[in-house]
Structure formats: structure tokens, C-alpha cells
Amino acid sequence: MRRSGNTVLITGGGSGIGLALAERLLAAGNTVIVCGRDPARLDAACARLPGLVAIRADVADPAAREALVREVTGRFPALNVLINNAGHVEVCDPAAPAHVEVLRHEIAVNLLAPVALTMLLLPRLRLRDDACIVNVTTGYVFLPSARTAPYSATKAAMHVMTRALRFQLRGTTVRVVEVMPPAVDTAMATHYPGPKLTVADAADRILRGLLRDRQEIVIGLSRLGRLTARIAPNLAFGVMNRLELRPAPALRWPGRRRAAPDQPASDRARS
Ligand SMILES: NC(=O)c1ccc[n+]([C@@H]2O[C@H](COP(=O)([O-])OP(=O)(O)OC[C@H]3O[C@@H](n4cnc5c(N)ncnc54)[C@H](OP(=O)(O)O)[C@@H]3O)[C@@H](O)[C@H]2O)c1
Image (cartoon, rainbow, N blue to C red):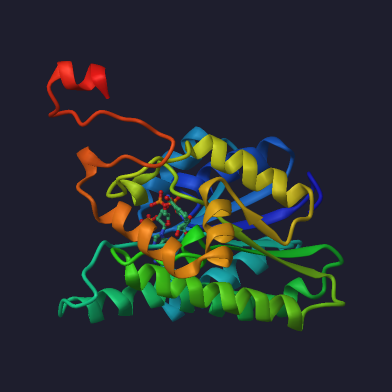
């Protein structure tokens, strides 16, 4: 992707990783449009980033998606980059009854929405000589997380769809990129007990990957997930999930020694 002069639509760009990417892309001289459901969040994003264009849209709603595409292509016919970033995660027990409803919503946001938006925009993107579709998935595509099983399943499906789309569009002017971040310190990851990248760090690494024309941007601990899933998939799956299921205060990730807050000070000094 070239550094400047792009017209970029970022779904869920009103906060978190999407907003940090919007900030960097705007600063580099691109036109950036973000969408989301919460008008207050979009207003705050526009107040923070002059020049940002925000459109209220729920990408999980088919009618809203079509309206979004009509508005974006009408107002910004030069659109050449789609970043499918909006996502939803819930911690859930796959054996509990609520699991089906959680799965339905996560499929709508994390899988159906990016696939449908891509289909709606592809005819336009194919007219551009430098188009790019970026799908934000997660390191869980390599090692699925049992505590967020529906999320992991939808993202793994998106990983497959991304690879297939890349293959289908080979030899065209449309590049297909997948971004697999590890845990990042956003609202989405408040439940996550392990180490997290800062949003700024994650956005910097994603942008670097995009500018280097990487087709898979695998960041931080997601790289370890990819490696261990190849070498010892069952062992790696078990270790990661056991670590994730441990109560947060006692959690110690390999290479990171951290005392539990309820541990006596004398013990902490020893550990
Ligand atoms: N944070 C992590 O640890 C992490 C790790 C790996 C991958 N990721 C992926 O990175 C992407 C961005 O996540 P984040 O961490 O930046 O999350 P975030 O801070 O919670 O932001 C998610 C954004 O998506 C928007 N959104 C959610 N549902 C939407 C819908 N139906 N229609 C339109 N917009 C919607 C939200 O805005 P509204 O609520 O206003 O709609 C919000 O602005 C996601 O795809 C996520 O799966 C995150």
C-alpha cells in the first residue's frame, strides 16, 4: 500500500486499534472514513482527529451495510482501501446455553460483516489500480482460545476466507492482507488476563506491515502462537489455554515474573 493519497474505509474506526490506524493514516496524507454504531464515540473521534470522516453504521446489519456502501462510494469514489476492523468478543463457556446467541452475534460482526462488505465493495475496488482489502483477525487463528471459543471460531473462519479471497484475486490489482494482532490494550481486551501491546505499538506495527506490502502481518505473541502451533499444536493449545484459564492475579506468563497482588510483601521479594 502506498503511504499517502489513499482513500480508506475503516470499520469500527471510532476507537481502539481502528482509531489509532486512522490517526496514522490521516497524518500521512490519506482520506480516512470510519464507521461505528455509537454516535458519541464517532463525535469524539472526529473532535480528536480533524479531517476524519465518520459515518454511523452497524456493519452487522445488512441494510446498514448497504447504506454505508452507497454513502461511501457516492461521497468518496476514489475509495481504494477497505480495512475490516470492527469486531466483537465475549468470554463464554462453550458448554453453556448462552453460547448459541453469543455465536450468532459474533458470526454477524466478525465474519458475515467483513465478507459482505468486501463483496459489496469489490466491484469498485477492482476498478482501482492499487486497491487493498485488510482483514483484522487475531493470533487465535493459530491457537484458538477456549474461553473465547465463538470469537476464535469466527476469526479462524475469516482467516480461511482471507486466504481464499487472496487466491481468487491473484493477478488482479486488489491486494488482500490479514492482520493477526496479539492482545492489545483496548476496550475489547479488558477481560484478558495476560500481557498486552499498547494500541500505539499495535497500530505502528500494522502500518509498517501495510507499507511493506506484507500479505500477513503477524504481530508480537501471535508469531509465537504461529510457530508453536506448527511445531507442537496440541501441546501449544493446551499450554496457552491453561494459562488463560488461570485466575488473573496469579497469572504468570513465561518470561514475565509478576507477583500476585495478594501475595505477602516478603514472598514477593523472594519471587
Ligand atoms: N484488542 C485485542 O486484544 C485484539 C487482539 C487481536 C485482534 N483484535 C481485533 O482488532 C479489531 C479491533 O479491535 P479493538 O481491540 O480495537 O476493539 P475495540 O477497542 O473494542 O473497538 C472495536 C470497534 O468496533 C466497533 N464495532 C463493534 N461492533 C460493530 C458493529 N456491529 N458495527 C460497526 N462497528 C462496530 C466499535 O464501535 P461501536 O461500539 O461504536 O460500534 C469499536 O469502535 C477487532 O477485529 C478485534 O477482533 C483485537
